[in-house]
Image (tube, rainbow, N blue to C red; front, side, top):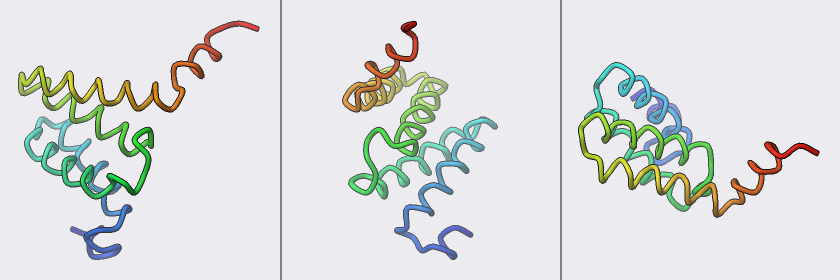
Length: 103
């Protein structure tokens, strides 16, 4: 609520605040609340920041974990697959190999 007062409902910084708040809720077991916050943040950030942005990657990761704890395994796998695809599309695998390969 504070972030919305400062930046407005549709500002990316409000979404970033919601992502951090959702991570806190997820870590304390309030996964329903976290899922709601993350899906709203995702809707706001779609088309504003890239799919491989830190914000979207955090949303994918945290939603995947929340769905897993709810035993919604298909939804969890979808989130992790979305995250992996975003990284691959951005060349993440290539960069990872370059980091792990000596020389």
